[in-house]
Image 1 (cartoon, rainbow, N blue to C red):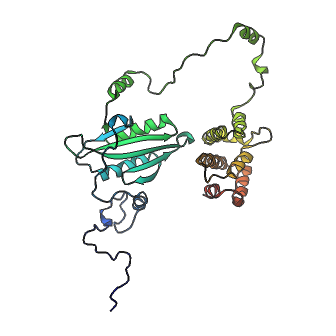
Image 2 (cartoon, helix red, strand yellow; image 1 turned 30 degrees about the horizontal axis):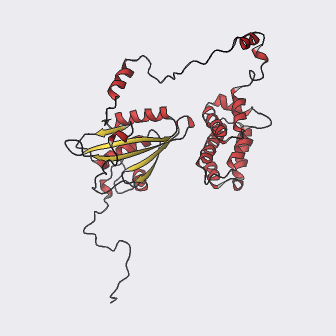
Image 3 (tube, one colour; image 1 turned 45 degrees about the horizontal axis):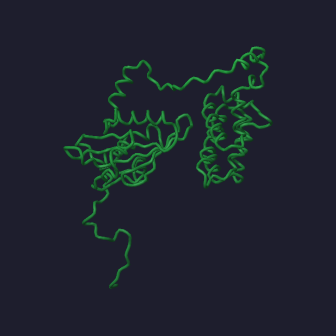
Length: 327
C-alpha cells in the first residue's frame, strides 16, 4: 500500500463544504431538474456568490455614493437572491453582464448603438434597523446618460427598491410629476445675435447656392466616417449603425459615395485597424459590423456579395474584427 497516495482534485474532505445541488436551481422552463439549463451556465460564468457571506459594508461615506443608490428593506430577500434578480432584470433590458467580484458586476448596453458601461455594487447597510438591508449602487462609466437613467428607474421599479438617500429626490419626483413634459428637454442660452453688417449681406445671398445646402445627411455621415479624427469616425459609425436599422435609409446609404469612398471601403479600412489595445477602435469596429449586418438584411445582392467576400478574406482583418464578422 502506498503511504502517500496521489492527490486528485476533489479528494479533500467534503464534510465542511456545501455540495452543489442542481435541484436547488430555479429554471425558467419546465425542463427536468437533472439537466443543466442555459441559466446555470450563465450563473457559473459570472461567478454568483454561493456562500452565506454578507456583502461588504459601504467603504466610503454616503455623501460620496452615486445618486442612483437604492435600498432593499425587504427582510425576506437575501443578498444573493437580490443580486440574481438584478442580473436577470438588467440582462433582459438587454445588456451584457460580466462579474468584477463577488458582490459587484459590470453591465454593457448599446442604446442607439452608443456603448454604455455601468457598474452595480451591493453593500450591507448596517445603518438600517432592522438589519438585513441591502444597498444597491449603480454608477455609469461611459455612454448615454439619459438611457442609463432610464435603466436605473426601470431596475428600481422591477426590483422594488427605494432611494437610499433623499438628496432632494422627493422634490425632483414631485416636480417631474407636476410637469407636462415627460421627457428631458435641453435648455441653454440663446446664441448671440449676428452683427447688422452680416445680416445685410445675408439678405442678398440665396441659401440654395451655398455649398452645404445640397449635402444630404447620408453624405455627411460618409464624409465624417472618412475623417482623420478618431472620435469623429467613431461617432459617424455609431450613427450609421443606428440609421441603417431602417431599411429605407440603408438603401439610400448603399448609393452614397463621397470622394470615391463608400461605407464598404471605409468600413473595411476600420476593420483592418489594430484594436487589441484600444477599446475605442474596438467599439468602432462593432458599429461597422452592425452597419454591414443591416446592409445585408436589405437583400441587396451587391452588398451581400461584398460582405461575403470580406468574410472570405478575414485573414487580412484583426482577430477581433474577423471573429465579429464571422459571427
